[in-house]
Image 1 (cartoon, rainbow, N blue to C red):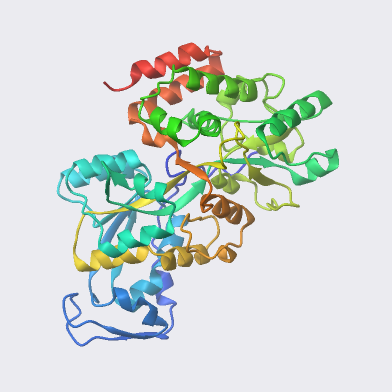
Image 2 (cartoon, rainbow, N blue to C red; image 1 turned 180 degrees about the vertical axis):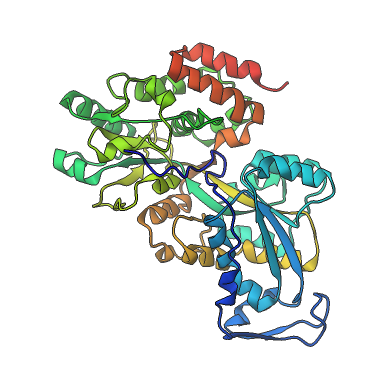
Length: 461
């Protein structure tokens, strides 16, 4: 069975071709009205907003202005993004001119260096944010944007900061720490969703010995990004074994890949996803993981050839049309347990951050709105498949069960949350040698020691 071929990229994990969705703004009724006592150029007398528009009063006073935004988010998701601020634009008179690009990561530095920076960029990698801050072009956010961070777990502010200074407010979040499975299959076989790592490993062994489906399936092929799912498996185990401090030191290479802690974590991954008795259901042996696309990896769950797949919340888009995703459906997901029970609720994820390259008043007004719980709630209402870790969003707004499960984990104040490690490591490692070496680990059976040594040797001096 072939899954949805519209594959997310490994960084922000989504793409296809952008189509502006500002038509949504035209559909707004005249319920929103505003009165302005000055010119509409943004510096005149403040507007008085009435009716449904009154809630946007804190952002008023800049009617007739335009701000530009550049990101990697493409249609159809960009359509939903534009719909989420359509009423804000209608009421305040601030036009947000959005552009999405498949080449965002390479084009943004070029535009900034050439003096053609957008007013805003939605940046999915903290490493790219740091690069932009070092260019000297990123403008610190206004006070209200800073205050809005109180609705996020404090660690998120650090990912929007460079050298201890806050620059970019988080917008979206995604949940990596999930295991997909078939509730129907589990119920028929008498399997229970495991609550601990030991229970998960025992269940895997039980399924393998039953002689039916393999307990696990997986795929790490992703074109030029082949290998990225394997980085997630290692990150989950490092975080779930040692907690946030060691994870952070590993990201910064104070703890090397060849350190005993990381090689031990790699061996845990090997016992799990390189176990010939446990993988790769529906496709072949361990080596087949390297040639199976991540989009297709979960298909054997639906045909009864595989029991589980470790993948992120965004994998929901890969199930074939008509697949019921629910606790009693064709597929659902549970939270991957911590390897070490002493680690409180480890959650690995990713997200996006709004960085400004201008301090104009209308830019700051948009920045304040897009960092608020009100905007996050608007985006949740617009369409499913998007999650915020903003604790001010009412969870009842989530209509998709995976979105709700993810939001609960991402906003849990007791969670040990960490951002995707490979997205924070230098690009030569996180999207270079680590992908290459972990692929060789699966495809060629290279040893843990060689894989770790090769990655350490490639680390920028």
